[in-house]
Every structure is written in C-alpha cells, then in structure tokens.
Image (cartoon, rainbow, N blue to C red; front, side):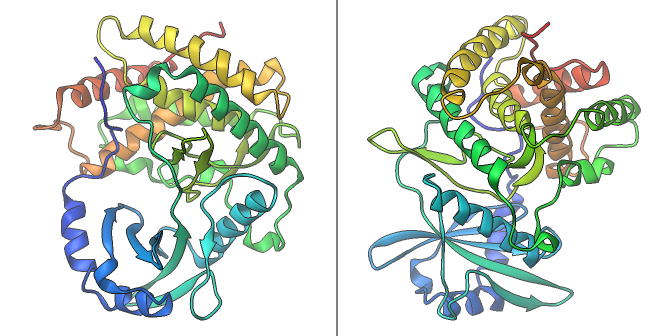
Length: 349
C-alpha cells in the first residue's frame, strides 16, 4: 500500500485555528510591521506555527507566527542566523526578509505568551511529492549533494552568540512529550528509553555532529526547472549527528510501503535511495561507514517522533476511527516495530 500524505498531517482542527487567528490583533500588528495588505494574505496551515502566504510587489512571501510555547525568540533568531549563513555560502534556501523596523523578527505580545513573526522569501519551483518522489534517482543524488554541502558548512559554523544557539537533538518537541502517548503503551515507552540510551552512547566529533536541518522531506523543498533544490522550513534545526538528516529523508521515502509486501518494497527503496543519495553526498563531504551502520538507530528515532506526533494530533485516540486505512495500518505496524526495537528497514546488517 502507498499513501500520498504524511501521517502527521494536521487534523481538521487547523481550520478552526485559522478562523480564530485571522481576526486576531496579533495578525494585525504583524501585517503592519511587515507592510502587508491583509487582502493578500492566504492561510497555508500549521500546527505548532501559523503560516500565511502573501504577495508584495509581485513577489510571493511566507509569513510565519511562532508561539513562545513552541520556540523562544532567541531560538527563532538562531534559526535565521543559520539560514543566512547557508545562503551566504552558496546554498539555495528560503531567506528571511526585513520588516519596516529593519528587523527579521517581530515579537508580538499576547495574553500569557508572545508570538515571533518572521517573513521569508517563498521558494521557487515545484513540489515533487508522492508517488513521483519514490522513483526519482536524479532527485536523490541532488538531495545527497545538497545535504552533504549543508553538513560540510555546519562543520565550520559557529553561532555569533552561544547563548542563542539552537537546541540539541534530545530537546525535540515530541521526544520531550512522550506523554502524548496513552499510558497503556508501556512497551513503546520502554523502547523510547532504550533507544535514547543507545544514541547517547554514540561518539560526538566535529566530523559527525553539528547543526542540521532536522526535517528534510518532500514537503520542505521545491525544485525549479533547472533542477535547483531550494530548502526551507528550518524550524526543526538542531544539533545532532549528521547521519540523522540522512535517516529522516530515508524514512519518509520508505514508510509509505506497508502490508504483506511492504518489507520487500522498503528494502528495494532503501537500496535505491542510498545508492544515489550517497553518490551526491560524497561530492561534498565524506562519511565513514560506521555512521551508515547507525542509520537504523535514527530510523527508529524518526519513527518514534512521527508516532508520538500522531497521538498528539489526534488527542491520544487509540482507535483513530474514521481515518484512512493506510494510516490505521501504519499505526499498527509502527507500534509493533517500536515495541520490538526494529527499524523500519535495515540494509546494513
């Protein structure tokens, strides 16, 4: 079976959030500070952030609101510094733009919290979604080269202010909120602790650990007519082992296969992806085979994060009634893998 949607797609409740937020004073303050005509705003979506699109002088832009309960303004500014560093060093990324106050972030207070508003240039090109992305070997090589360049630049990157650096991998929102899972899922919780212990034991060196994107998937880049990939949505940027950025991309290209023939299809896809991805990656950065053999650990980590996210999105519901069959099957298969400490695919045994 195959599915065109990531299983953590926001539920229908996002529409009620949109309706409330669209007339909120926070939005009014932001559009004034960025000089936006409200009639040009179109709600895009969001669950942890609120995302809008607008046009200005004929060009498309993105307006993002980040609640302080999700990220502090310091973490947002650290994200923007990282994006500009990559852009300054030749990477195609969606860059932030300045407000009328000559600031990249505009902090807007609300009752009990604040929102950080940021505007970005909208990436050019088109999305290569499912199922098209499942056979695109040229895309895999380009993604590999892009990721290799990002990691090579990360090795040299030092934030201007260490007190405003991005968080480490273990501070991932979902890893910090394992309690989104129902109390009955004791085996998954036990697997969570065992997995994190194994990952903590990995060596950290400048060649293996640094600032990564943290969520590269088909929804977070566009490809233009010349084949240039523009990467965006750095909200999950974190310090981690570089191999996690590889495992994340692999996960989202194999998890769509399930059912009786799923394991075989996942293995075929994993071989296909890694062959061409690493061909591109090694044009920019070397990677010891030791780290490739750690990919199964990070595949388990990504599955755990997506699994917890599913329960957050659906309020801990263990029945998932009314959801599509692919999703119901994935939940059951994912639960079994997590309980038994098995990665979704392993071609490194």
